[in-house]
Amino acid sequence: MEPTIEIGPDGRVRRLANVLSGMTTDHVLKVLADFSFAYARESGYIDSTEFDLIHEGRRYPPKAILGLTAEHVIGRRLKSSEFSGGEDTPCFRILRRLGFHIEKKVPTEMHIEKRAVVQRFQLYNREEISQLFEPGVAFTRGAGRWGMPGIVETPKESGSFVLMVTLGRPVDGNPYHDVLTADGYLLWESQTQHNFESRTIQKLLAHDPQERNIHLFVRSKKASKYVYLGLLEYFSHDLSKRNPVHFVWRVRYWDLSPARLVELGLEVSAPRDPGYTPLRETTTQMLTREAVPPKLVIPSRDSKRSRSELREASAVNWLERDLRNRHLGLQGEKLVVKYEIEMLRLAGRDDLAEQVCHVALHDSTAGFDIESFHADGTPKLIEVKTTQGPKSTPFFISRNEVSASRRHAESYFVYRVFDYSASTGQVKFFELKGNVEHSCGLVPVNFQAYPGGDSAA
Image: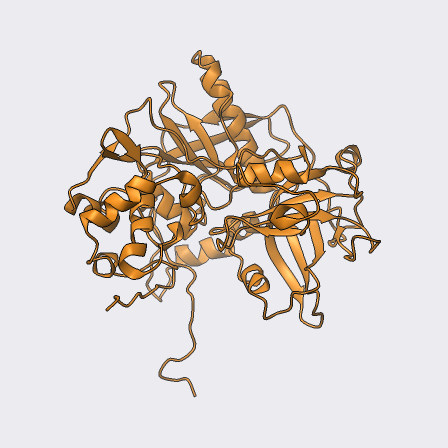
């Protein structure tokens, strides 16, 4: 009898050791014998970042091996998003109990997770896009998964998608009316066979950018190549329209001026927000590091608030103001990318400076914003939090970012950029290293509520 699988609110399998209690050494050996990254990618797995399972002189990603081996025990593979890997996790304990050796990569071998190498504002045709996301996949112009549809789920059944959109009114060969606005919103119609009951539409409606990516490639003319504009996040949809379903998506990082849009050959409509002002690039700002972060202060949970707390509440709420400023996070991240490149060049590591990557522009699920390096080549995974307020201002951090800081504690950093102003020449930051559960006081401010308690009628 197969064990019952219970999935928690976070989408992860509960009591993983019990679920996989029937796993044997032979099960794992079968997966090792046939392992390939192409097969592993179908379930969302990529190469390991910090640990390897060593078998007969070869190195394998431990988490992927366990997830694929689960098929021999419970009848299906576990997806990467359904459990965690790393030290002190059931994943590693199960594999070691079965006699397999797992060791940490040495610094020269450590590398960051391999992702599709896609660059914002670069031009791609459909075949090039297919090879970015599924290297080696067969491509047929005008047919198949990549040759014709405007939306592709990749990897299959992953909940992550690539949208290839031709803007404009319906014409022969393109029956859809898709519009890009000057302030970075996409008014998009699904394929005509889709309705609210379609699996694809259900996945799009449930899209969480912390867990899945939706990539946007767009063009204004059918004969042109597509411009990669980055990632989308759900904004709204029209309940009154079916076959196709009408969505409004928001481009997560929007910093395109009218002149740049013309340069890219993209036709846009008026902004959705009448008060929208295009972002003005600042090239003269410099980032400087403060050595000591502020003293840890966690607000009281007592229902009776002190006078000082009441005075503080009546002051400027920088946390809420930062949240409303759509451009703020991007500006802070750009400054950190520039800072990391300059520090590596000063250390004589131009080779590493060229590899600094602004991950958040093309992967919102990573749990960090920037991949960089120490001068000795060991990785730095940097989450940037920017505020217009003082350095004591708290910041929001997602469950995914907390989890990433736990998994990659030795290489994870939060860079807290504070007192930010576009008119200031010098901007300061301090850094917090390692698991944020240790470096910060975390206070729960949001909960998921499931109707059906004692008072439910």
